[in-house]
Image 1 (cartoon, helix red, strand yellow):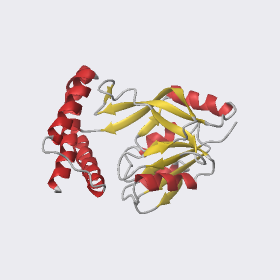
Image 2 (cartoon, rainbow, N blue to C red):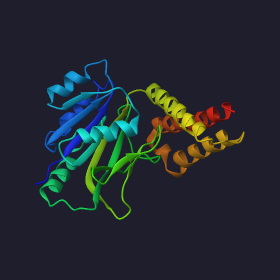
Image 3 (cartoon, rainbow, N blue to C red):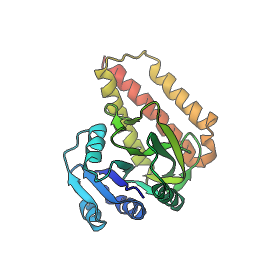
Length: 250
C-alpha cells in the first residue's frame, strides 16, 4: 500500500476545517495545513486532528498550494479545500486505490457536489464538477495567475475518475456568494489589466448575458429552484462586474 498526503490551505476556516479533517482520517498518512495567518480557531482544530500546521503570509493560490505540497511527507498528494469533505463512497474508492499498485503516469479525479445554503445543487454546470485531486507532486504542479489556479498535468498522463463525490460546502448564505464573486471579479480584472487585455463597451453585457443563458437554461440551472435562479443571477453579475472593471481601468 502506497502512502498519501492530504494537503489543505486555510484562512479563518474554523467553520469548515474540522469536518474536512474528519473525512480524511482513514485515507491520509499525513495531513499538511498551510494557513494564511488565521485569526480564529483554525489552528486549534487542526492540531486536535494531528495535522502538520504551518503558518505563512498569503502569497497567492498557486504559490501557496505548491509550497504546501513541498511540506508533505509523501510524493502522492490529495489536494483539498477546507470546505470540502470526502463522501463515504469516495473514502472507499481512495482506500481501494491505495491498496493497489500505484500506476505511474496517472492522476485521479472525482466529481464534486456543491452544497449551497443547505441545498445540493445538481444543475447549471455545478454537477458533476469533476476535479483532479490526487497526483504525484514530482510531475504535477499548480499553475496560473491570481485566480483560477489549475494543475499542470503532462499530456501523456491518464486521468482516472474515482467513484464517490467530493462534497463542497460552498456558501452558507447568498450574501457570501455575492461577496466572493465580487472578490474574484476584482482579481480577474487586475490580472487582465496587467496582461493588457482590452474590452469593448458591450463586452460586459454580452458575457454576462451568455453566462446566464447558458447555465440557467441550457445547463438546466432552473431545475434547482429558487437557489438555481439566485446562483445563476449572481454568477452573471460577477461576470458583468469583472469586465466592467476592466473597462473602467482605461
